[in-house]
Image (tube, rainbow, N blue to C red; front, top):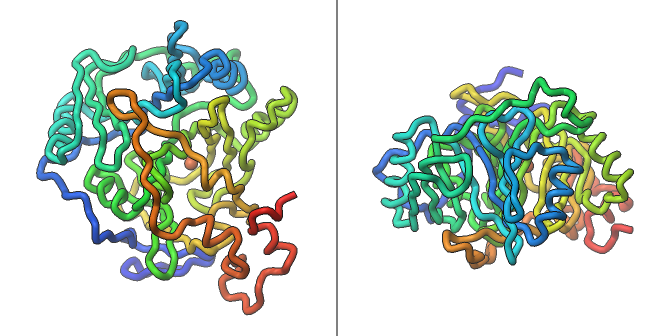
Length: 388
Ligand SMILES: [Fe+2]
């Protein structure tokens, strides 16, 4: 089909495409006059863990991330294709929580821009010329308007890219950090602020009343660097690493089974509707959620179409129609303020995705134009308490 770019168009795949993201807010965060920093990409996440040895076993011994530096209080890890110092910092602490969502910017001047941007927004801003963690220089950390600890840096130590070191790779090798996923009560408000920060929306889930349940947004030319998921927040929903192919994800499942660690598998493997990626969700020893992700699509053109999913479409979260487990909707990690204290969680007041799909007979569909309800055996899967 040829698509009229000026219209919202129903595709043969069952979702709509449009040029502009249909995400509007009547409660916007003011747009700063200071220009936004030029964000290159998602760079690393700093997470606090309560048992560093157990986390090391999970991320290094099982998932195969590579150690750049470690001592008895913190471990710095990177994926196989990474050349900057790290993609994940594990820090021993009293409470399981996220210390930083960190982005790399294009130049040292963009760190200045980040500082000015958030200062104008009235956020708490802290800048350290020597950085907040090992391997990274001049950085700005902020408590952003949504309550998330965001970081921006340019200066970083380079380390060896291990892409060619196949002797070190495992069958489920993690090759890149792909994205963050954040839980926040008001998705349109969050999306508008991220657009001010220079992000572009690629996909979203909403309903015919205009309630937006989630939005995906990118700087690098993939489906996302981060996503905003509607829920009680600020919390961290997951951090996602990319692997090369689908079979790598199956290898991780087989390994977890062989190690009698199948309880680490929360959801999947499967194929997403949103993003078209193949996925697997794991929970680390503290319950932090990690996604293994592969094969989404190129989004780098300026007129890349925005994909809109109906919240009642059974195939939006899983293209094969596999139900989402309740914990995936409800659980997420706390985030820390710049003093290392957990941020207060604010309840979402709008409808929640779980409530309008699971537990609502006849609300969901496989084919939007079917006259009849789903068969009874399928409906049961979407009701809480009907899973054996
Ligand atoms: Fe994800």
